[in-house]
Length: 200
Length: 416
Image (cartoon, rainbow over all chains, first blue to last red; front, side, top):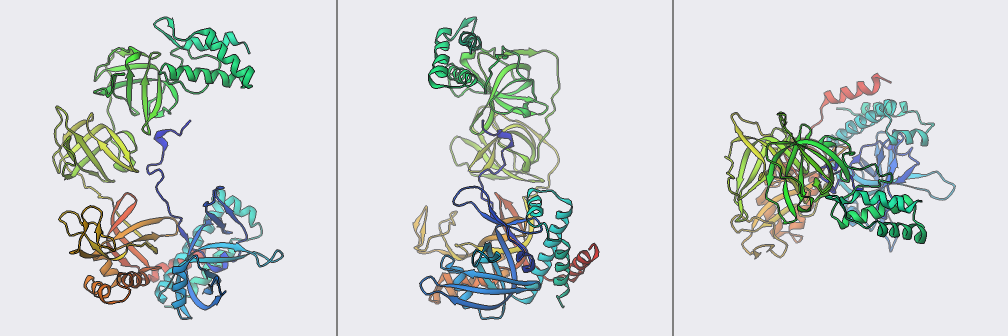
């Protein structure tokens, strides 16, 4: 039986873009669980944050400290983007030609805004999972924009830490299962330290 | 399974004017065949045969009814908005509108309302149902709610009984907010904010209605007794048909009850403001060429081709940015028009034209320069939200607010 017409969402089938989550490098580094929503080839993959939110896309601003070009036939760029809490590992390959051209032009060090998709990988079977960010877009920004991002990421992190304590969404439950040893107080402190580094 | 008993049960459902519509032996044969030959579960076989007969006799039947409890009148009495397609229902409601049947197989169609809402109904000619009068109350037993063009619809068939309710009941319809409308039947209290040129000779009027929560397109088709709405007038509109096309809603006012009233409404126009980071600049942003034909203004392709007016060499340059604004929890589609683009990027139309005509990359260079100036930046965009896209009137860069900084420091340090 079809769903009741009256309960159908007003804009059925309209496209909802996955929002870009704000997460500090220090939290993203802790991720070791990812999952797929649906069995379709094009189903999105999500990395689950220890604070209980899924992310398919993230937005980050930090300092691009180094970039290296690798590969001959399948050339790609790797880069390290540093925020007040740690380092994001970013990469742009031939499937992201726009991002690759953007990163090629940037001279390090520089403040960069990165929109990209996080994913987990392992160097080999035995090693711990690493999170890298496949860049969709990377642009040079100024310090003020970087500071705005630190505020934004701190606020979102605190929101998640609060929700983790009181909420019971499926993702929060899953996060508690997947990251039993993680103490959310760590992320509150991380946000505080990041904010404290901003000098005006 | 007792086949003859099951067949009896099924045949009882298909009786019209005292004569059975279906042959019991035939039903029994079908059941036997399904169960014995095809190994179908008895209850499923009964459901399937019942469904087949229902289709044959144009009497939509809902899911399984293995125990034959439905011998007329045994259907749940419901409020109109509670009905789900596929259900047998009994409603008490008022016929608030009648419309001309669109097919000879329909004897009557219109809208039935109760205090919870309203639903379109159709009485099949085959049903031999008594004609209902507009404005009267009826108890309709054993109708079937199904779905027609994505909207719930009440079918009155030969098994439905209709009784007029003589007591005088009042029905005060409550208007909805425009943002809460959904496909079906709806009512609003709204102001006519725009009137558009009729796009069809049968169209009496079309335009835009607005209330405090948003706007919606409306249309009135030519029909005796229908009058145009006054631009700027405020109307209470009840029992209008809310249509959905390509995900957009519109109000069809033919058949609606329309009352003009005094007063004014501060139409929101979907005025909205979002703050976030610009996370994507879509192709087609930057400097574009527009069709010069009066009233067209469409964006031309690289070959100066307008989808309607073909090649246009005397195009007009314009600036725009299409993209996504993201606050970390939701992403909004945004469209910046020339003024907003010039303010945000600091590149004027004249400067962009100069780049487009003299730089080896041409218009692409404008796109790249604008992208590098806005992507990843925090902005506040204000404008009208239409169909999930924000048409931006003004867009400004967010600046660092030390009070916000202090507040967050306290929040992070305070409750640790």
